[in-house]
Length: 432
Ligand SMILES: [Zn+2]
Image (cartoon, rainbow, N blue to C red; front, top):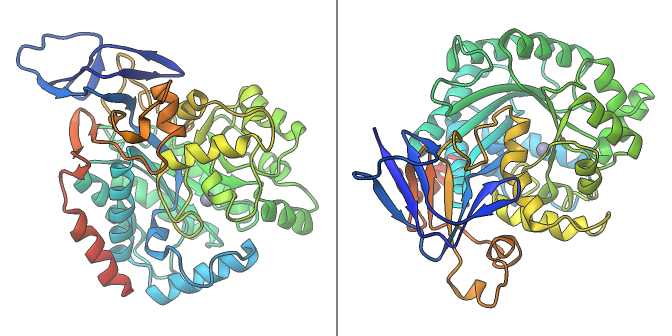
């Protein structure tokens, strides 16, 4: 039995806005109320706020290899998509690149306090070994000690081929696991087309069938401005009308972005039990506007937080995007307070993944947590250390990160792999 006690924190954020004092005790990777701590490993949290590990509900890890690419900034999405596609084609997306980009993206995640990443992988060259690509991302997560949700996406892929690949990835990565989650909870497989702007009804239906067979979560992107434009011009309907017709307004579905969404559509999303992922670090620089998070929350929609990928948001720093979410929320309604945004970045994201054990520090939750040092100059004069996590110190990184009760970041450094080696190998592959 392994017992870990995190002791002496300034505050412990348990989840859903609840903050307490005292220890966090983890036995065999799971948070418990109390335990015999005679032989426990004690982690000193003096001067720190402890939060659940953050959950990035929407990332495209491959894009980590294509950050700040010339010709991909300050342009509309209809130009951005082919510019990114040309870069992918030039680099040659294969299992090697998929793995190296995932290693860099997941290393960045852990160093920023993100313990679970949902990687919506959308780039599948015609002759690709798609199982090997998914396995490369999964292996990267295993090496680093991060939790990964690998989303077998599609973007103009042949529908039958995409569905067969999703089926093969499930069989290879999470065989015989109802819900698509590995026995140790470290790996999950989900499916999802890029959106109605890129994929036809058949892709949604066939990937939906794979999801139904295995109990997988379904994830897609909706109501970026261009998504609405294309849906209206191609089908004479708005994206949510199409998703409803195609069987994709359901409680196992999470919609990322949701920028251009009406009050009526918010009510439909809520009534269908669909969850949402807010991604302001992508939406704002892409010029898509600000999703009405306050109104989604007030309607009862479970809202998570994601960074989206390096092609639009050059950082995978979810806490920085939590800060941005607070700042821009005031442009579209009452400001969303820090505690609500922290809930989005933890349990809100986890709920959309069907993972109620993640993003919380209540008894029974996974032992994924971060120690954020609030004793330094950035927090001097801060009245509320939990709100200060988000408001003060943009770019803040945790001192220590645990996943399933094991230390994966210590003294602000990766424990299991050499950060510089991760960087060097990715640059070697993309030659920049
Ligand atoms: Zn996205």
